[in-house]
Image (cartoon, rainbow, N blue to C red; front, top):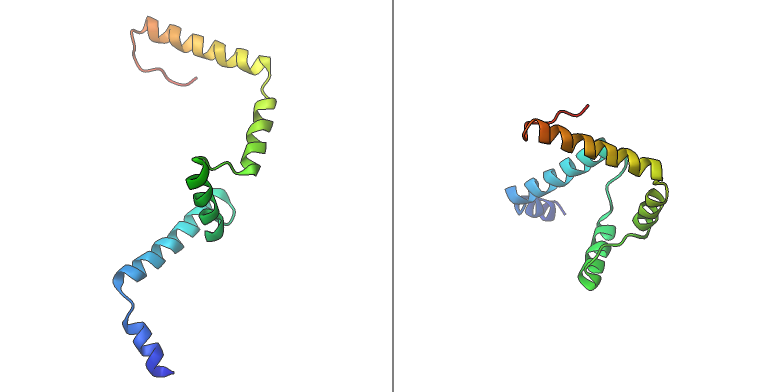
Length: 103
């Protein structure tokens, strides 16, 4: 048994260690940024297979979230966005393209 472990340890390369380190680093970054576990390898493989078959990764939960977000858009929200865009275009025209600061 000791010989097998020693042989296995001797076959570990720097590239293997770097790969493991990168994976751990990715998981920590993901948890820090999004506050939850990263997707599992099986999920990623399933998404990749779906992308190869359909040309689209259409995760059902994502479709629902997008539909819900779109359905919550009101006429007032669109008017506000249009007014902001109109204001910025006016400022850009008046300043002849100078940088516009967000107000």
